[in-house]
Length: 591
Image (tube, rainbow, N blue to C red):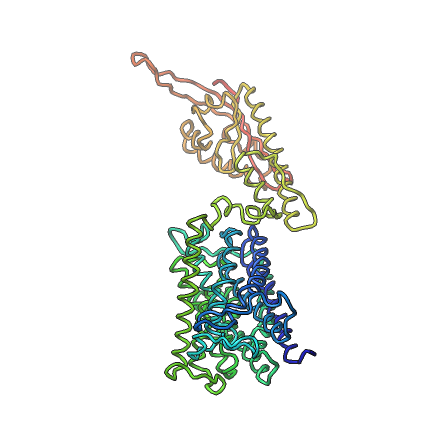
């Protein structure tokens, strides 16, 4: 049998929906931290493989098989196991498989950066084999092409309409993600005990932006292909899809900008996606003007639900729940508000389309969230689904997959230096990457620091052998911990490194001399001050002091120590001779 233009359109649309999978990976990896990017990427590839096979084996039968009381399908398990598939079945199965994978991958972003890889695989199995296909049967059972089965779901019989899956695909994934983040808890540091929630910056925002661009393109197949034929309605469906996306983006951007004072990139990214999700349920039965309203409200719903999650301290790593769950609910209800009854062609319960939509939304919440929460909670009790604190700190790239990155190597070496104090450790030097260039510069700094430490140690050994007072002061005039053995006796202080030089001298010299000393030190640290002027302006070049030492024996008078001292000052410059780093002070005399 030769393929028809209608079947070709559905196959092309399925390819576009498949192409959305790497786009979700780009968005999620870009909005999460570098140390988790590999984990996020591999989860997206894993879930499409698992969901595709499970949907083929069992999911398609549960969703579109002959119905048992309108609650579950029960025929067409493992279609094509023993013989080739009819053309209409293979085309429809291909398209629906892509939808199942889309619903599964939504969970990945919400639970990112703290769910074990093994736990995520189990979660994908639950949504692909149980939650998605059974709810899909309730809503879409009966919409399958003739000859596949006569199964019709109970929501479909009530008149519930979800054209391309605002609820069936997006809200189902959102509810599973919501159950996951409640059980997992927030990422470390996301919600401090005091203050506002901390935004965790993504590692590659340009990649996330590119992902949203191509997701928008893939949505043409997602919504346009849901006609299951290349009909006259397809161009307007695609147009409504694009208008909803644009309206969601613009409204989310400017409302968010007005509220926060900043045009946050997430307003643009998630506003676009919220507009797309919102219009997915109704793009076949509304006008372009109504699609704009629906998309715009979707953007506002996304902003409001994001704020609500923060207030409830629920940590959604990429904003999947506001985008897919909350905007999906709105888009589904919008069918009952804006949908053209002639295009809908339904006979809703009590003649009320909005009521049919509301029943569908509530049923999805009870089923999807309920099953996901109970099953994940049981699994968590058997074996925790969250990674350990240490693994979360290291990042799931290395903790879960043993896959290191340049940024992780840099972080690990620096952490080891902090832990051990070993400044001889060096970073891997790769000259052809940005991190490699940073590592090279860091290694140069550490080389200089190590040389400086060796010099300071040598200087300290030298000072310990000098019989007269010698010490070094810093730019704030404090005395460096390395000084000669005679310095404490000179300054009448057992530990002079705890004090500034002028403060110690203030006990020994007049106020006028102290003022002159402070002015002199300020000049010494001024690069413009001529070295030739040091000797002439030195206020301590000849100093006579009478120092009273209290007698230990109260019957004897105090001892008066008469000292004649000469202080000399030498400046220490940086390598470029552009800055005075220290001043070395020596003093000779009778003390």
